[in-house]
Structures are given as C-alpha cells and as structure tokens.
Length: 347
Image (cartoon, rainbow, N blue to C red; front, top):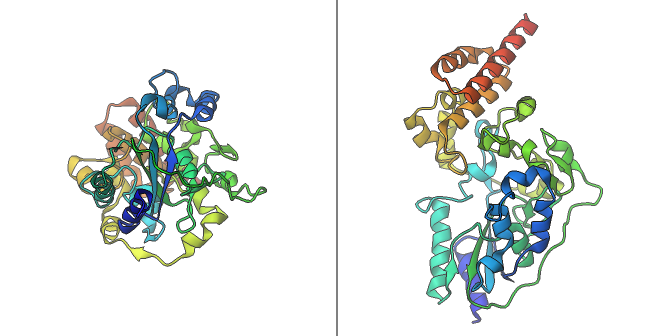
C-alpha cells in the first residue's frame, strides 16, 4: 500500500472525516491580502507577526516538503441552548487546539504518532501554515463566503488539523472552489456586528470573537449591544448558511459532559469568577484564547447587560464594588445602566 494511502487510512480510523496531502510552499497572495487590510495591522506590523510567519511556510520551514491535512467534524452534537447562546460550538466541542490530555487532543496526538511510526518526520505546530488554504489545496475542504472551510458531512462545523512533513508525498487534487451560491449573502446579513462586509471580507475589529478575546485592541463599546449573550465566539453566520442546513438538521448525539455543564453554567458566576468555577466550568470549554480572568468578567458583564433581566443588577453592583480594573468597571457600569433603563421603560 502506498504511504499516502496508509496516512489517509490511519486518520480515518482515528475519526477524522477527511485526510489529504498538499505540497509546502509560501503563500504570497495570502500575505499580500492580510497586509492590505488596515484592521489586521496589529497582527502584521512586524516581520515576526503570526499572520506573516504562517504565510512564509516554506521559507521558515525549508526542509518541509508536504503538508498532511485532516478535518475533524463537530456538527453531530446536541448543543444545550444556554451554552450555545454564550459559547460557540467549536469551543463547546473542545476540538479547537485541544489540550493533549483531552479527548480530541489525544486523537490528534494519536494521528501524529501513527505518522511517525510510518517513518515520517512531522511538525506538530498547527500555526505554521494558513490552514484553510492548505486544506483546500489538499482537497479536504471547499471554501465559503463567510471565510469558513466546509466538508460535505459537517458543513463549516469542522476543525482543521495540519502536519508539515519532510517527506515528499504525492499531493491530492485541490478543491479551491467556493460552493456558495453567487447571489447568497445570508452570512453577511446574519452577522450581529456587521463584521462581514463582503464575501470573504471580515472586519476583524468588529468580530465578536476578536472582541471577546482581549481588552485592546478591540472591545469597542459601540458593538456591545450587538454582542448579546456571547462571551466566547459566535456562530450566527454559520447558522444562517444554507450549506450548513443538512448538518444542522441531521440527527444529533448527546454530549454528557455538556449536559453536566449546562446545569452549572451561570453568567453571574462568570462575572464573579473564582478559581474553582474557572477550573470546573469555564476552562474546559473556553481555554483557547483568554488567559486573563478579568476578560471573562468583562464579557459576562456585557452579556448580563444584554439579558434584559434586572434580577442581575445586585450581582453587577457587587462586582462593580469588587474590582478596580477600569475596563471591567466600564463594562459593568454599562450593564447596570442598560438594565436600569430597561426597568424604567417597563415601569
């Protein structure tokens, strides 16, 4: 059996939905595009910035010859409503950058070990190549007008996994095409903060996930109302996409761990975040980007302000007295004012 076929069988056996191979090269068009976008400047301002580094895959990894690409779907889970209202499905599924001791981290590690046992030298770093472009070149995804990558089974609800290897493997046929209808702009219309301004054109600083991750840059108070209850990502453009209709309406399986968390998840407890609640409820589904607990507290304050429920006012007032960090105080004060105004309107 060819080594390429052995690679694909190993990945499929481990639960990946597609496995393909592409050659390694620099992505000059990608670098030119990100450099042309002023809102990406915080991430392209230096030669060592991440977006510029991943565009130079071959230059920075001269021994790499091929990239092995795989997809891991997460559309089949029944996501509890109170969790999916605040946390995007990619994070609830625990598939994106999973820890090595987590289920999907172990799955990715098992695939890496299988490749090494075949005699391949691989790089486990997932951030040394533009993954969506590489996976389209490897024939495992097609592209969407909302910037996501799609597979037939899971639509855009999939995670991409890539390994650079020094072995020169036979590449697969690319699937560069975008299969979205030319006249479809449902993803653009669905974006709560109007971050998608044209097909495949995202204003990063208006994206909810970008604003959820950090204090500065981002965290613009002019979009706080539109952020709703979301504290860790957003799925709206994917939920509106007709290419996801089949995946969204296919039979679902219960995730017992999420069913446990749905009984424990409470935005007031995220606002008042302590170490135990972080370790048991927040970190398992929101470990990806946020390392500062005050960002979680800020996000929870905004969500509570958008809840429309004045019953949260006592918790917000306690939180305001408990913190002296200005970005958090600003969000709490905004939430208190918003709920108080709602009370007055109802009266």
